[in-house]
Image (tube, rainbow, N blue to C red):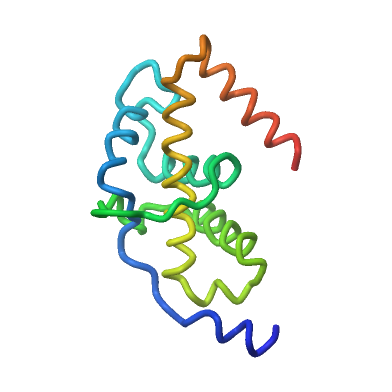
Length: 146
């Protein structure tokens, strides 16, 4: 670890809540409340984690603009989900040093989810004939490629 690299990150604590753009709240709600969605009645923290992962692969980081909305309390994340969020930040920054800047780690996750939720919503409710089958194939292919 170079001194210059470690100075890039501050020692911070994450915010109490995980945030999204307020105007994208309806995308999360559609995915959770419409019976045709594969995410019907899924917990918000699970949907957020999936949107973050999907966004990392399909959309990239999209900065949160405008008013933010607290989607859920960070304490509702399982240990495995926190590990995935940290792994995404390490991969994105290509440095373990990012882990000392917890606020930035979650900012990265929020930005990937911000892009991912729109793509995911479009995938589930888009014009495709069988969005669930297509999405399942994408997830399986992604899993198999690791």
